[in-house]
Length: 145
Image (cartoon, rainbow, N blue to C red; front, side, top):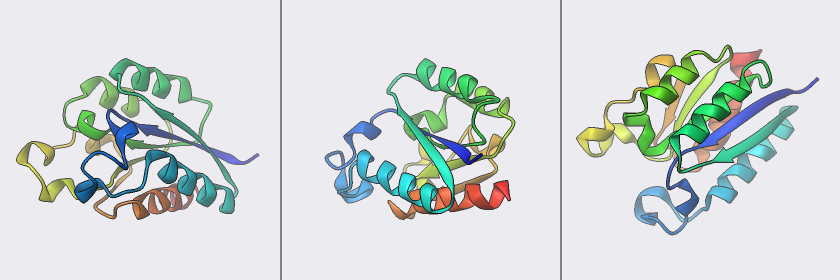
């Protein structure tokens, strides 16, 4: 049976392609998800995606992933820096968690320098733009092997 990855996208990522393209690029979230799905397929894995602007929806998605999916890739967007409930849900997930950011958060505003997700993540991919989606799926494959 193929491994399944849950890709979670946090608030405002539905605006990719039009929101601050100088920081986040011109590609849409659908473009990034398509890349991740293609790479997952090439590596013999399946990928599910959920985007929400609501914290509770993402927390419940992590709860629902327990015992059902093998790994989670999460771009929690601004929730990265304050969502203790998402952090706690991810901490309770049994498989690998890869934290993903399009921009290099350490090189941006000081409030973006602290992630509450990082301490419970297996690894972080940050600052590679859209290429990060490919890298995140490849990282999951390595972590699962």
